[in-house]
Amino acid sequence: TDTRLTNSAGFSFYPAISVAGSKVLVTWADDRNGYYDIYFKKSDDAGNSWSPDIRLTNNTTTSNYPSIDASGNTIIIVWQDIRHGNYEIYSKRSNDGGDSWETDFRLTNNSSFSEWPSVTMSGQIVNVAWEDNRDGNKEIYSKYSTDGGITWSGDNRLTNNSSPSTSVSASSEGNFVDLTWSDQRDGNWEIYYKYSADGGV
Image (cartoon, rainbow, N blue to C red):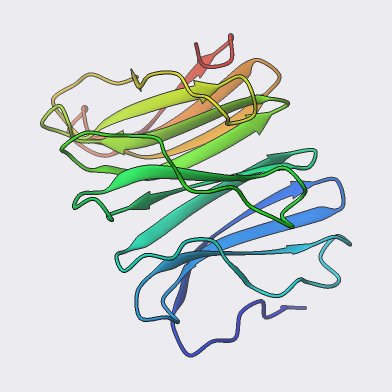
């Protein structure tokens, strides 16, 4: 049956989920404090019982649209954040299964909007993809980490056409990274796909 995971006076929106062994990991955006922050909770017993809500961000602007993935005890959450005046992609990581969290890490830095990120993790290889309008229209970008999200590559532009490319979703296994997104290059919205066989390089 349905299990209610949140119970607050604010809105709880945009959930994302990941599973690592018997751990079930959930993140979402929540405005219980008057503006949207990223929250997290977990189950260590395959969803039978749940931890309290954990607030992961704390700033007076909007943090939303989170995505989560995990490998072993390492958890990566990415989201879009407007604390600098335009939306940028941020990440946060835990090395102990979600019991404690490192500080926020800014992944993008440009004068346009970087939005709707999707993260995937396989071993220590982490890939993040998002939509970005730095080129005058929305294109799909990505970047990767080979050390579990500690250090990151530069931004990689993955699409190049005059119509919008949006709503990317990422998945990976081993060195293979797969992406799908919505694309209007054909005059109507269609689903496109591409993959990397070298961990996103």
